[in-house]
Image (cartoon, rainbow, N blue to C red; front, top):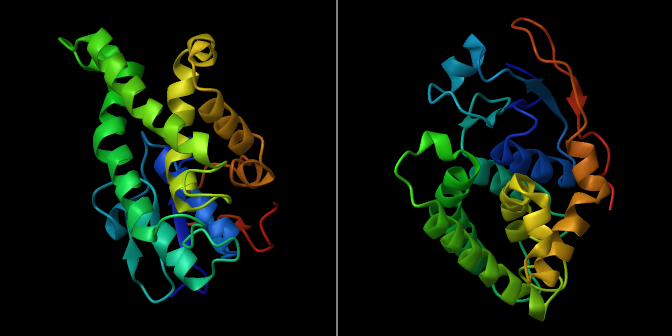
Length: 221
């Protein structure tokens, strides 16, 4: 068995970003295996036949293959920034908001970002629906600096990677929206040292090699 958890990841994948953020803030040393999505390693597919990242293989052999499960595992072991303890609302409230992101907003995001993959989609209606959901985040952020209160928490870290993708589709259009609190929230997260840490580039992992050991020191504020 490996002495450290092994994380199969792809740097730009928002689901994998979730996992790395939680592992980093929880100071969980792990072996990072950066993969190519078009050339998935056999060892990853053996551990998780679904073939998507992230995949976390724990030293005892347990496999976590959903990004939210990895976040919860990491934070339940160590949660120095209190991501599981929002200043307003509950963990259940945050999980419900994340579920909305995953089941409602993510399909809209995909259709906005990759319209050629979804022929027949009403682009205007899809964009309007995505904007309506983002407007809900704007309302939350009119009350507090973060989605669940006065400090960053799980909801922020699980949702921000997807809002980042939406903002990147058309940056000028993003900035033109009447969402000052949402725009400031995303900019604050994007400029954080924590995000910079988990977005550091590492070489693509090769079968049989050892990936770099990461997240061994406290995550920066």
